[in-house]
Length: 179
Image 1 (tube, rainbow, N blue to C red):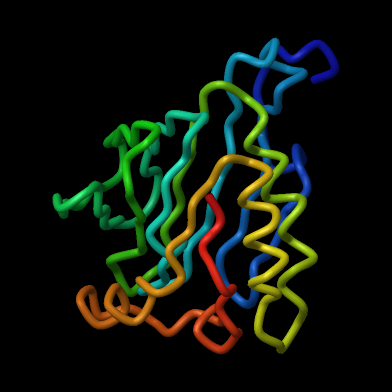
Image 2 (cartoon, rainbow, N blue to C red):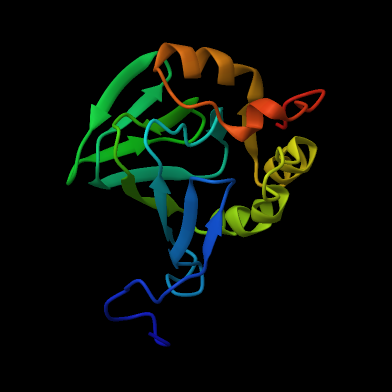
């Protein structure tokens, strides 16, 4: 796939793992798309929250559910999507998503414009095996990418949507959310 055309399969893109569950795999990055968009695949374990409430200032995201049932919170609106459904998450909108089922879920994220996909590679090392993630490092990376993260939203999201407790809850939240 050196020219950016043709099928993209399991052999493309290194898998970045965040703790024991969620993954990110960059299928198409900025170079392959002329910096117009990127495509990232996420696998979510059963009842797993993808991230705390967060907001992108530079990108729009479009999520296509390919496996499982995924819950979304956009602003105050809660809804679910299944295989084949597409969800738009516009920039400057607080949102999060989670695996609402008891089996693995898989989504494709189309991110426009490209560039944010590099965030996943950057934060991957901040999730050491068997230890809480480096939330200060995540906050610093988030600031570089124009991403605001609300780590204080984790307990409410976990309780409200009956989700598994993420490793982020065992770390020390940064003094102030990145913005």
